[in-house]
Image (tube, rainbow, N blue to C red; front, side, top):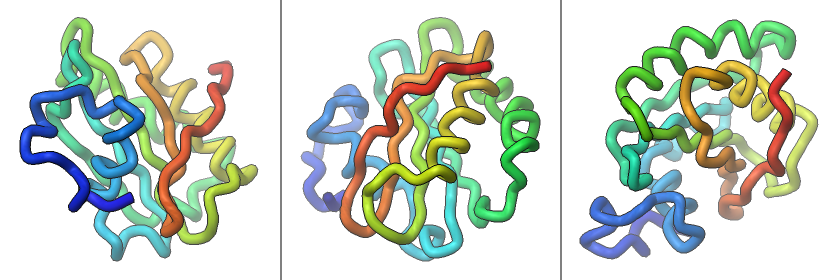
Length: 141
């Protein structure tokens, strides 16, 4: 996984395609943001092409029970930016391997809960030094 693998015309294609998602997340999330934990939100158009990336650094200390409430205003704004038919691709960047941890699952649940009724979530992925992998779908509360 490296953004150097992206073809020149990648912005013209859906970033949710399995051959591109990891490379696009690698491009959007700076290497320096990963050791302390970061969240990446990629606003996508109706054809899942990238419209706007947003990266939040140093998320590791956010209490689990506050994560959804913390994210709701941001995801509401991103939903307005995406417009009708748009969606959101989320990345949970952190150090370590690609096994989905308890913390990854709680972030994924918070993202799904905060996005419910606001913006469609096209996917949530863990991004680590070893690559990228989808987090299994979580049920929003």
